[in-house]
Amino acid sequence: MSPLQSHITALIRASGPLTLAEFMALCLQHPEHGYYTTRDPLGASGDFTTAPEISQMFGELIGLCLAQTWLDMGAPAPFTLAELGPGRGTLMADILRATRGVAGFHAAAEIVLIETSPALRARQAEALAGYAPTWKNTFAPKPQPLLLVANEFFDALPIRQFIRDEAGWRERVIGLEEGALAFGLTDATQLAALEHRLDDTEIGDLVEVCGPAEAVASEIGAHIADHGGCALIIDYGNWRSSGNTFQAVKAHEKVSPLESLGSADLTAHVDFEALAQAAEPAAHSPLTPQGVFLERLGITARAQALAQNLTGAALESHIAAHRRLTHPAEMGTLFKVMALMPSGAPAPAGLQNGA
Image 1: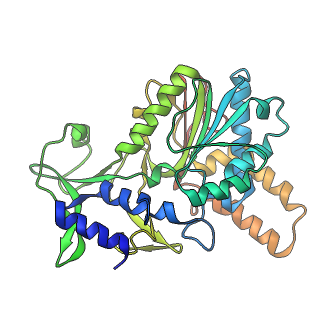
Image 2 (image 1 turned 90 degrees about the vertical axis):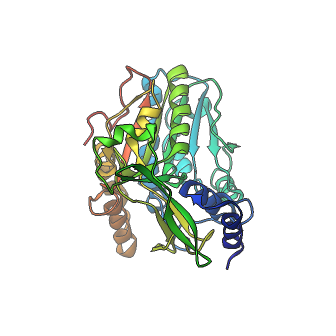
Image 3 (image 1 turned 30 degrees about the vertical axis):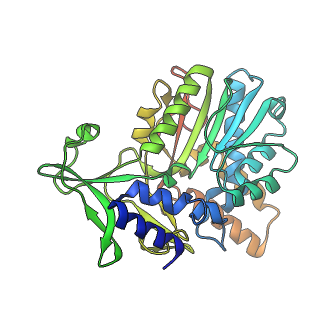
């Protein structure tokens, strides 16, 4: 039994079952044994690969989208250029490289990375050497315009799960069964926060709620409404939560969430409707598939330009990366993009018309 599993087992013995949110928070962020506090999880040698690690084209197009938004805002200076959960710093590095030619953009940008992992902060410092970013543990920007990107950030925030039955909602929890971790259910109760889901759910349906995600979206939306700017949220999920999407991934394979505690990534699909509602009074763009968004920004033309100097295995890898980012059978449809912006402001390039 791992140290983290022993710790969680002892907690349950002492205080009773944990909510899924409590369990996720411990597994991902425990100061000594948490998944994100102890490792660099990205890449072929890690547990998963994100879009910026697949191809430079992703970050380049995000950068140009943000720069055009900045120009449309009147090129404010200074402004905060922020990323939530920056991974290895690859996305921000690609954004900055792609925007070098945008007059005044770098001079006006104050780069802020919201990251709690010491291991990943070290990788980000290497990737962004020469740019002098500032690191923060939480979202707390200066009172100035904000351009923010969150790629695969919200899916890792702790969720709670509720199953509807005749008497109300029963929460899915984690307890002990013959000494081993096991899923269980609480007694049914009425929940005002899920009253709106009675119209589109039936007995036995499972709904996921992510309070931390809504709290962050609320802070972002309030800041943008007050100070201007734009946030790009890119993640897997749908407009409304439906069904059990809680999963664990280790070495690029799905594993049981109750095994490999602290050494497997735990995630769930993002409920974009909940983020949009939490972000009010900021407005939101139509929810758009990632593939559609990238094609509108010109990824195919960029891919063709880069391919001209490639041959053999490098060319094959490049073609595969383009397909992986955009094809409906890969990341193109599962991953969605939504922007937050001030009420009345136009949506950023690529997001004006939804799917």
